[in-house]
Length: 445
Length: 177
Image 1 (spheres, rainbow over the protein chains, first blue to last red):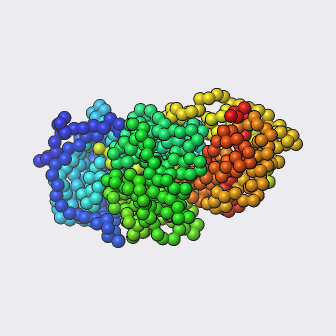
Image 2: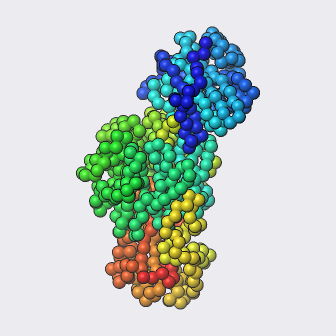
Image 3: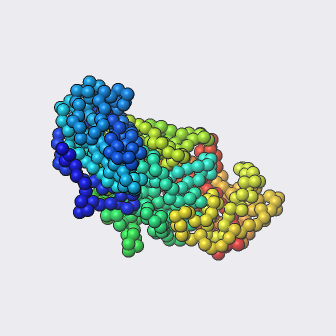
């Protein structure tokens, strides 16, 4: 009774950059719901029995895929996995009827079943999500096909689909994070760019550590990265193609320093800070024509600009009032409006991809915080507190933030952490080396 | 004032590339990304530090006159002590005209990365402007900010922070205007 089908070339598409995953989707159905805005969320018990290997090749991936799915969901703090040892039912065929009483007996509210076939370099993963207590499938089955090396991405796609159906929000697991990998003592840190899956897996390094590199940012389609490097001896912004690693300087004028670059939603304009004669202002450069525009002209420090997702506004920080505060101006420049009004200093504002919040770094009374506020500055909420938290970046669904946390003192090392915008679920991201300056990619296609 | 060990001085001078690459902290060379850049203009220009008792030596400049000045939290204005140090530097630079000058601005770790880069640039610029006011030719000087990337002291107390909030005048031979 399978309603799954294999892909036709017409709807198949692949993403050469990330290994290529394709999917087919049928209709939609109903609840089993986690409401992310609820102040208290009891983690939803779920089960992901090992996927069924439908051929010999599938055996290499079946268990691994279900483990990644479980880790994705449990890692949100919204779901609690019921371990396999507690399962009563055994899933040996993807199309066999679900024995709901066995899953009810162990209080699994959500059940994910799936199957894997692999042959040669190709792998096909399919899954279904069940609402155990209402005794029905939730949404249609989905199938993903791609290269075997992208098996983790397929697991993330299954988890994204389950997350989206249960929360009503977009997923964020099939995404990448570019960051700065650090090594060496605090007074001589070596830094290089790395890129990894959102959960720290599949790390690749994009530069060596010959020069200091800072604050990489993805383009809206994830194919290019902006960053600041001391390659020339002076901080300058560069643009790298992720596929080829081909890199070029974006805006180099003798006697100036450029930094804090970020793409506009059009993927073509870059907003950044340019320092000349000790004064830092905000500029844009068109990456195709090279046209430079100056957006602010003040004797104060204007930096850390970030576009609204519709491209019409820019939020940035300025110390024109005497301390760092957040301001919003039109994307073309003009009179900015101050939006931060609490005690302390505010920096590194980043507009949520959903447009609803601005995340920021706040310093107050010797502590650093990551916080969020509405785009008019109201409803400020601090999510973290430590010796040094800074540089928030948004998950593609605008519901989770990743940032850098560094410990104090000689042995202090930076690490990546994530937290929900509710302030729940603070966790460290596992990285091979100390790491800083994360920037989240969009959800991969 | 500050006593920098001899070993560190040797390292610092060996690290000075000719004129347009002041990054004495990097390992040199382009990154794996091949981010081209302006680095090409020549090799390492090594020269003797000389003896601190020789008033024309780099060692005298660094140790006796003092190669750095310090700043208050978030500030880039020069204290009286800083002005005195810089007046001494200017006098020396006006006598020893073969040296090119890179002024490095630095911040302590209590700030966001971007803000500290901008703040370090302000500090370096304040020093440059003062040296210009004392007759040092502008074309001999460049500034660079390291923000909070290169502290010299690694503790996380004001004692260390106060020495990290600095601007350092770094000399290199033969690259004058």
